[in-house]
Image 1 (tube, rainbow, N blue to C red):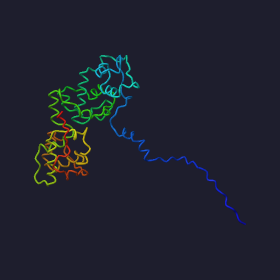
Image 2: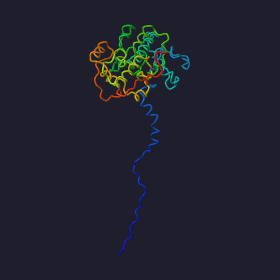
Image 3: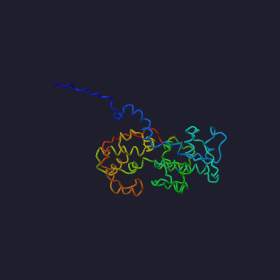
Image 4: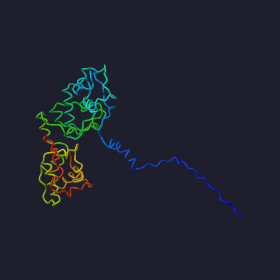
Amino acid sequence: MSFSANVITLGNPDFGVIRIVPEETAKAFQKYLAMGSNLTGVSLDDIQLAVTELPADSNTVTLAWLLEHGMKLFDAVVWMTAGRPSSHPLAADPGMKVEDIPSLHDIARSVFYCYFMLVVQARYPVSSKNSDKPKIPNFLKTIMGLDAEQHEYVEKICSFEPQKFDPAWARYVSFEGFGREALSRFGLGVAGYRMFGPFALYSPKPGLSAEQMAAFEFAKKVATSEPTWDLHPLTRHPTVLTKRGNLNKNLNNLIMECFTDSQIKEMVKAKVIYKVPEREPNHRNYTQWSREDDVSGSSKIFSH
């Protein structure tokens, strides 16, 4: 007896599984990734739009008008940069008291406070919501008389965390009209250069190898050159890392190799460096550093 095989009807099964197209997915994610990877950028939803009274025409209102009517400086800049959007209109706040609005002089001192911190420490002071508070230089407290808590200056000009407000603006500030005391203090040093300091002030101990002396000479050239935005941490050129590695950690090791223990202790006592260095075994780029300064560039901080 013979049997014929039954024909199986396959149909079109739906497994409920979607396979992505990698190339198209990358294109769809590109703008989101670019935005997500940036530390700066302020949402219009994060700024305060309240003013004591509405202007006759918000399209022609000035920055000074906004400040005089209670809007905070950074908030006002964000709103004006966005083109005074109708989606986020100014709002009159009848509860806002004119006497509580900082004067333009107070605002000026507050923005200088932030600017000084950016240039000297490469970071903003923080608001009261942030527990990671940078140490405030004595210059601001004793010479400039800005001795209130740091959050008071931040919160006079910003209603959001200032880190979202791109600090690169500091690069384009001109020193024209700055007070003599401030200019003198800036001349004592800016962010990114402290670990280079010993190489300008101290002679190397005897017996260094040719490689160590080459690295010493490089560090000394940078230390004795006019500071640049290419090396400042706020705007450091990405090629610095590829050419020389992590500068501070390599300089930390180089200090240990180039100077005696007594020299290093003196550096710490004189606050040339923060503390006695500890070995950073993963940062040995300095062993191959050449003498020439190929990282400073020409964007001098004090030449504009």
